[in-house]
Image (cartoon, rainbow, N blue to C red; front, side, top):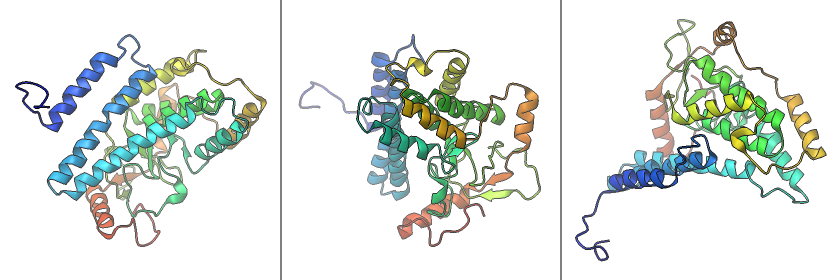
Length: 314
């Protein structure tokens, strides 16, 4: 840059990330449509910057843990964009075999391996044991943002009833947990850690989760997702004003009926009594962050997740 711009003073990568993020928001953010897809995509692009900075910092300072964490962050954000593009896309519209592609994705993502009472798992429950700890985007973690994107994509593919069931799960999750939480831990047998800060344990000996991350709250993308879902579920409009969805072909109707028959039907918890009952059935867990991070470190050192496929919650 100094060869092109006169008297240019270079800035460090972190400063560039701040400046470019602010400039992107100033130029492209739609302040009159806060919940637009454009804004969510923009936030997703900005979320790549911290991951790139972590990779750069790890390389410069020879810190493999930070570098690997940056790559995991990049992989996760990229995965969310991929899932969004696969479902919330017109690429299947008009294809002779569109039913095969859409049906395969929908059946898989809404199967018991992924579907929980609070949303969609980041990784299939059948893959338990790939690592001997609970990672940030593992089979125990259900992200509110990812669940929202799946709901929107499913509706885009002409399956509104199924999309509503996914959206209801997200709304119930934040209401029962009492916070717009980043994600929730859900065991393979569907016990949910609604008490995500472990401040209201049910027993003197709760089950220990060796997790690498503590869910944070409030999180902006969970807030926007919940607001969008409340507006959508309470009206006849499309989710986030999505347009151009495929016609209600007979195969879409048959697919939705088939999948809904396998998905437990849930209703929005509207009263405090309903929320208390749901919370009372929570999983009794406590997080061992130090143990999870140490297991993560050992897994990176040996180059594989675990030596055996055993129990994740110790």
